[in-house]
Image (tube, rainbow, N blue to C red; front, side, top):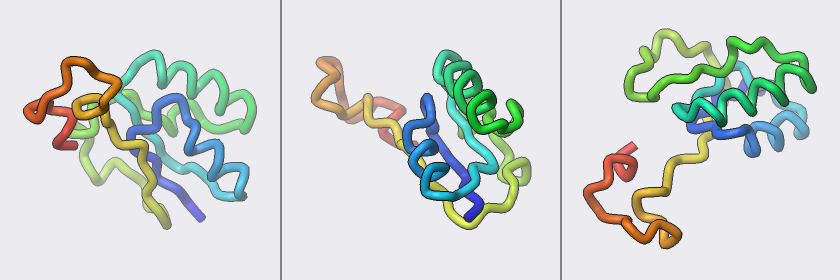
Length: 97
Protein backbone atom coordinates (compact mmCIF):
# COMPACT_ATOMS: atom_id res chain seq x y z
CA UNK A 1 0.00 0.00 0.00
CA UNK A 2 1.00 3.60 -0.55
CA UNK A 3 1.11 5.35 2.83
CA UNK A 4 0.66 9.03 3.71
CA UNK A 5 2.23 9.77 7.12
CA UNK A 6 1.13 12.81 9.14
CA UNK A 7 2.81 14.04 12.34
CA UNK A 8 5.62 11.63 11.44
CA UNK A 9 8.14 12.66 14.07
CA UNK A 10 11.37 10.72 13.62
CA UNK A 11 9.47 7.98 11.77
CA UNK A 12 8.77 5.20 14.25
CA UNK A 13 5.34 4.39 12.86
CA UNK A 14 6.63 4.75 9.29
CA UNK A 15 9.37 2.21 10.02
CA UNK A 16 6.76 -0.33 11.06
CA UNK A 17 4.78 0.18 7.86
CA UNK A 18 7.94 -0.08 5.71
CA UNK A 19 8.96 -3.30 7.47
CA UNK A 20 5.44 -4.64 6.82
CA UNK A 21 6.02 -4.09 3.09
CA UNK A 22 4.29 -0.76 2.52
CA UNK A 23 5.69 2.37 0.83
CA UNK A 24 5.74 5.76 2.53
CA UNK A 25 4.99 8.12 -0.36
CA UNK A 26 4.67 11.34 1.67
CA UNK A 27 5.42 12.31 5.25
CA UNK A 28 5.19 15.49 7.31
CA UNK A 29 6.25 16.98 10.61
CA UNK A 30 6.73 20.51 11.94
CA UNK A 31 9.71 19.68 14.17
CA UNK A 32 12.93 20.47 12.30
CA UNK A 33 15.07 18.09 14.35
CA UNK A 34 12.63 15.21 13.81
CA UNK A 35 12.57 15.83 10.07
CA UNK A 36 16.38 15.90 9.91
CA UNK A 37 16.58 12.67 11.90
CA UNK A 38 13.93 11.09 9.63
CA UNK A 39 15.88 12.11 6.53
CA UNK A 40 19.19 10.87 7.93
CA UNK A 41 17.74 7.43 8.61
CA UNK A 42 15.11 6.78 5.95
CA UNK A 43 16.87 8.36 2.97
CA UNK A 44 20.05 6.40 3.64
CA UNK A 45 18.57 3.11 4.86
CA UNK A 46 15.63 2.79 2.46
CA UNK A 47 16.82 5.00 -0.41
CA UNK A 48 13.79 7.30 -0.10
CA UNK A 49 13.80 10.72 -1.70
CA UNK A 50 14.63 13.45 0.84
CA UNK A 51 11.70 15.40 -0.63
CA UNK A 52 9.10 12.86 0.48
CA UNK A 53 9.12 14.28 4.04
CA UNK A 54 7.94 17.86 4.31
CA UNK A 55 9.00 20.15 7.17
CA UNK A 56 5.95 22.39 7.55
CA UNK A 57 2.96 23.03 9.79
CA UNK A 58 0.21 20.65 8.62
CA UNK A 59 -2.29 23.52 8.70
CA UNK A 60 -0.29 25.33 6.00
CA UNK A 61 -0.04 22.44 3.53
CA UNK A 62 -2.30 22.45 0.50
CA UNK A 63 -4.00 19.08 0.20
CA UNK A 64 -3.30 19.19 -3.55
CA UNK A 65 0.42 18.94 -2.74
CA UNK A 66 -0.05 15.56 -1.08
CA UNK A 67 0.22 12.60 -3.47
CA UNK A 68 -2.40 9.88 -3.67
CA UNK A 69 -2.16 7.15 -1.09
CA UNK A 70 -4.06 4.09 0.04
CA UNK A 71 -3.93 4.82 3.77
CA UNK A 72 -3.22 7.79 6.05
CA UNK A 73 -1.41 7.20 9.32
CA UNK A 74 -0.38 9.66 11.99
CA UNK A 75 1.23 10.06 15.37
CA UNK A 76 -1.07 12.89 16.35
CA UNK A 77 0.22 15.41 18.90
CA UNK A 78 -0.69 14.78 22.52
CA UNK A 79 1.59 17.29 24.26
CA UNK A 80 -1.30 19.62 25.12
CA UNK A 81 -3.17 17.04 27.20
CA UNK A 82 -0.52 14.48 28.12
CA UNK A 83 -0.03 13.82 31.84
CA UNK A 84 3.70 14.15 31.11
CA UNK A 85 3.11 17.88 30.52
CA UNK A 86 2.84 19.68 33.87
CA UNK A 87 1.50 22.76 32.02
CA UNK A 88 -1.25 20.99 30.05
CA UNK A 89 -4.54 22.75 29.51
CA UNK A 90 -7.60 22.34 27.32
CA UNK A 91 -6.90 25.51 25.32
CA UNK A 92 -3.53 24.27 24.01
CA UNK A 93 -3.66 24.64 20.21
CA UNK A 94 -2.06 21.24 19.69
CA UNK A 95 -5.22 19.63 21.06
CA UNK A 96 -7.16 20.72 17.97
CA UNK A 97 -5.07 19.20 15.20
